[in-house]
Length: 380
Ligand code: DGJ
Image 1 (cartoon, rainbow, N blue to C red):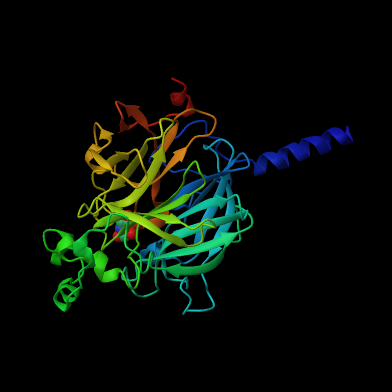
Image 2: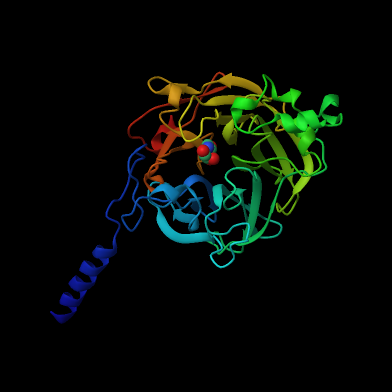
C-alpha cells in the first residue's frame, strides 16, 4: 500500500512537470508554447540538426520599446519532432559588464544562425550586429563558437566581410576610384538614393574597409563548404560569400546578386535535383511585404528571379510575415519548411512564427497558407 501511494505521488509530481501542451501539428501565427508553457522566444531564427536533434536559435526579445535591441542574447531550444520544443537557455549572452564590447547589452543582434564544423568539431554562430547606440549604421557580422549546440557560445569578433576583395562578378566600373561626390551623395535611408545603386558604386566605396552586412543566413553545401548570405551595399544588393574551412572568416570568394532589388531576410535551400532556391523579402522595416524567390544551378549564380512564391489570400504580405530560414526536414526527400517571423515591433516578445511547407512545381517554389498542418504533407 505504501509503495502504491509513493508511485501515485511520483506520477502526480511528474505530470506537474509535463508540458502543458503536446503539439502534434504546426499552427502558423498562433502562440507556440515551449516545455515550460512559455511562448518560444527565438525570433529571426534558424535551425541546426545535430545528433538526431533539432536546435532552434533566435533573438531573445523582451517586452516594450527596447525589446528589439539585444538585452539578453540568443535563445536556443531543442526538439526531436519539430512540434515540441524544450528551452535550453541562452546560447550566447550579450556583454553586461563592458559597454564598449561589440556585443554590449543594448546592441542590435539579429538573425543568428548556427552551423557545425565537422573538421574543428565546433558549433559556429554568425549574426547581424549593430553596435550599441549607433542605430543600423555599423552593418557588421558577428561570429561566436561553442563546443556544444546549446552553448555557451563565446564571441570571437565582428567584421565587415570581404575587406579588400572584389566579388567574382565585379564589373569594371566598380574598380574606378570613388570620387568624393559619390562618397558624399548617399545621405542615408532609401529616400536619398538615385534610381540605381550601381551609379553610387557602394561596392567600390566599401572595398577597403569591408562590405556592409545586415540581414543574413548561413548555408552548408553537400561538399562541406559554408556560405554567408547577407544584404549588402546599403541593403540594395545580396552578397553570397564563401567562408573559410573553419567557418570563422570569409575566404574572399563572393559574388553579388539582385542589384538594386533591396532584398532582405534571405533564406536558402538546395533540393535533391541540386537546384538552389532563395526566398527573401523586400525592404520595409518591420512591416511585411511580398516575398521574392529565385533559383540557380550554382550557388554563385546566375540566379533567376521567379517572383512571389506565396499563393492566395495574404500573398502580398507573405501571410503577414518575413522569411528567416528554410528548414530541411530530416529523413524525408525534398521536405522543406519555410520559417518566417510575424514581427510585433510594439511588443517584440509577442512576435509569432509562421512555418509553412515548401511546394515544388515546375522548377518553381510555392507557399500556401494553412491554419494547421503536420509533417505528413511531405508523404505525398
Ligand atoms: C527588417 C529586417 O529584416 C529585420 O531583421 C530588422 O532588421 C528590421 N528590418 C529592422 O527594421
